[in-house]
Image (cartoon, rainbow, N blue to C red; front, side):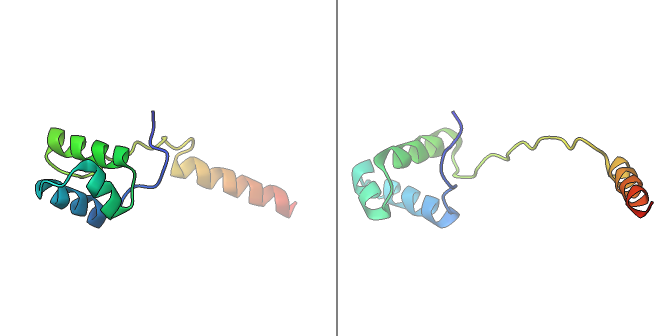
Length: 83
């Protein structure tokens, strides 16, 4: 299931990990940071698995037209509108 909210800032992620390393509980971290315990839990699990808090790059849908095709279409539309 894809994420639903905004991505957390790097500072916030680092603060969570710092508190985790200080042996704070997930509930205490959630209360301090102002996020849900589930969010804290998932961030800690990701940190344990990958060793960092970096987000993976997102895939982008490939464009329908190439730059050249786009220029041709725009040129054709301009020619038609001048007639």
